[in-house]
Image 1 (cartoon, rainbow, N blue to C red):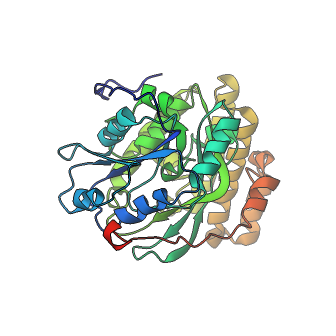
Image 2: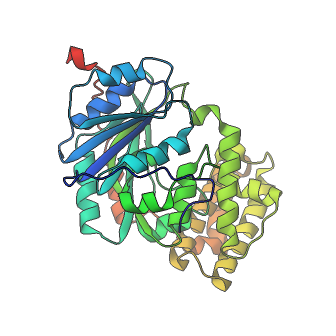
Image 3: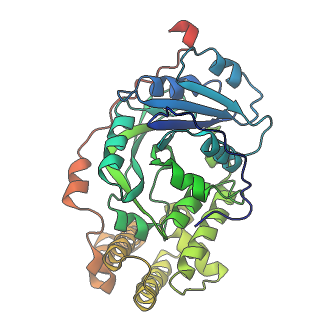
Length: 368
């Protein structure tokens, strides 16, 4: 159940008798420009029984000084003393968290005012769910809304099946049961994608879900770590996929793992799209049969995930095959039995929701 041996355990601080329902945890490194937006969005939440824990990972700008100007008893500031990296910082936050639930937010993002309340209510109603995410809108470096929304599967079985192909939870939107994450911890071998690794390990024993609501607005800007470490991210995602494939008895070689990784990533497809489709159909069928022989992923959910990924790859090949032939490929395959994938009535109805404007408050506390 626990994380790897590379996750050192710090002494746990004593817990006070009175604890908040939620710890909102923000790890931060050199985000003086944006951190006020994240902090202000939490302090303005409709749900009020929370503490806001910000752990600074050795910032060299004015991040800590900016945070110290806030005069709000709900805000706790901790530091690593030096730059230790994001998985170490996330573990430090887990150690300090006092809430029953822990809500994650990045230091350059914005949480909509109903975020905490909606997720607390869901976890209270669903004691079998260990963590819940949501859909996510996006803004640019200046806070202007982008025409982009990330939507992920909703049901626990669907999340479990999609883990085999990509990370179906958006880390900045997650609220989890604190004690469970404290038991698992983040793996220091994953400076990127430590969340994907955590979800994969959790999925062996626990259930996860997403809400079909936009509860967080993420920020896209040139300084994001994820955008500047693509090769490392690919390597770590492939490492997670390798482990998950092994759960159904598939020992994939490096070429198969790279092609498997590309199934949900348009910019990593081979130039030979028609040849790629032939391989994709064979590979997805192999996964389906392997799961039947050595069941691990929910069968119906895996069929839906495979159907959706098959349709996606066929559609992306339409510029080479033509639209008619691409559609013929979709419906002519035995993989199409999993269609329409995750597009349930609930999912489709929720897509009608327009992204609310993120009223990002970047004012420092003395200007409030």
